[in-house]
Image (cartoon, rainbow, N blue to C red; front, side, top):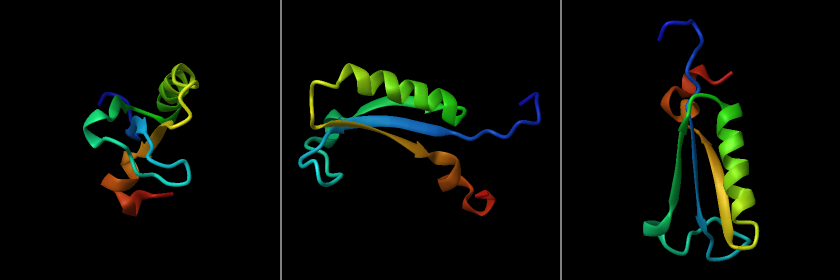
Length: 77
């Protein structure tokens, strides 16, 4: 990486939930992996776009996973 900025990777994914009170998916093979993004801002933009496209499906949910926290938990600030 050319600049000194640290990569803060974020995963955006979603799927249909079995029940709105939990986080169990109806079909794990049908998860929508939106992508991995270099920072929270771009991940949030992708999350928002996918969430808005699926607003008519109450069971569809998208999530942002802070991968950088999983990869380097000791660096969590």
